Amino acid sequence: MTTPLLDIQTWTSEQATRRQAWQASYLAMYASVWGGIVTDPALMLVPIDDHMVHRGDGVFDTCKCVGGALYNLGAHLDRLEQSAAAVHIAMPCDRETLIGLIRDTVRAGGKAEASVRVLVSRGPGGFGCSPYDSAGPALYIMVTDLPPSFMDTHPEGATAAISAIPAKPPFFAGVKNCNYLPNVLMKKESKDRGIDFVISLDANGFLAEGPTENIGIVEADGTLAFPKLDNILPGTTMLRVVELARELAARGEGPANVLFRNVTVADAEAAAEMLIVGTTPNVTAVRRFNSRDFDHALEAPVYLCLSQALESDILANDALRTAVG
Ligand SMILES: Cc1ncc(COP(=O)(O)O)c(C=O)c1O
Image (cartoon, rainbow, N blue to C red; front, top):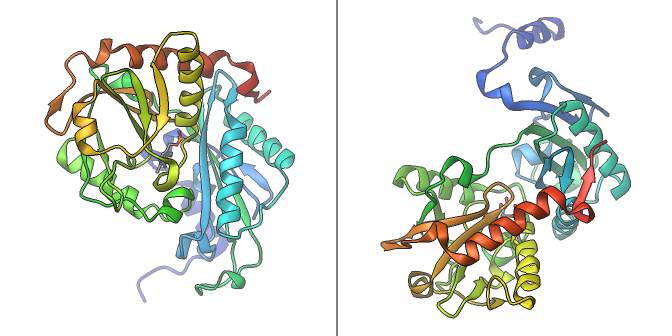
C-alpha cells in the first residue's frame, strides 16, 4: 500500500502545514460538536458523518457584521428558525445562547467587518438517508472577511439575464436549506455567460430570484414591485428595503408605491429601473437586462434613494444593530 495511513499525531502535524491561500479570509469557527471556537483554518472542519455533508440535510443563514455590529440579526435568526422548523430540525440551543455564541465567534475573528454564516445541521450519526440516524442537531458558525458590496467593485452597475436553470419548487425555494445545487448552477451559468446575475423563472414563467439575491423592478409610474413571496426566499434585505421604501413613499419620496406581484420578463424589460438586493449586494442597480439597456441606471431615482436609505440603516439604525462587544 502506497497511500500513507495517518495516526492522529501525524495527521495533526500534516494539517498544520497545509494552510491554503483561499483560507486567508477565514477568521473563526464555532462548532457545537467541539463546544468551542477555533481560529486556525486547518481546524475548520465538519464531520463527514454529519447529514449536512452527505445528504445536504441542514439549514443556514448568512448575516453581516458592519462597524462592530450584526445588522438585522433578528430577521436572519427568525428565518433560520423557520427554515429549521420547516425541515423538522430542532434548534440546538435557545436564541439567547445562539446570539452569545455568534457574538463570541465574531469577537474571536477579531474584525469589525465580517460575514457570519450560521448552519444548523441534522448532526452526525451514520451515513444513511434517515434523519433519525443522527444523534441530534449540530450548530456551526463560520466568520469570514466581509466581501465588498457589488457596487463598490462594479461602480458601473450590473448586467442581468434570464437563467436556463428553473426556480426551485416553492417549498424548497422558501427554506434556506443546504441543498443549493440549483443556485450553484445559476452562479456557474452567470460566470460562464459573463453576466453578473442570472434570474430564474418560476413554473408559471414569472421572475423568481438570483442565485443568492432578490430582484425588483420600478415601473414607469414609479411603483416598486418585487415578485410574490410564494416562489422565492424571503430575503431579509428585500423585506427591509420594502419597509424603507414604504416609509419614503409615505413622505412623498422614493417610489410612488411598493408591492409584491407576479413580474413577467416583458414587465422587467419595460421597467424604468431594475434592482438586485441582498446581504452582499445591498441595493445594486441593473444597467442591462437581457438586451434592454437601462441608460441612466446609476442616476435612477429609486435606486439612489433606496441604496442610500439601506446604507444608513446598516450603519446607523441602532434598533437593528446588535453590538458584538
Ligand atoms: C436564494 C436566495 N435568495 C435571496 C437571498 C437574499 O437574502 P438576504 O437579503 O437575506 O441576504 C439569498 C441570500 O443568500 C438567497 O440565498
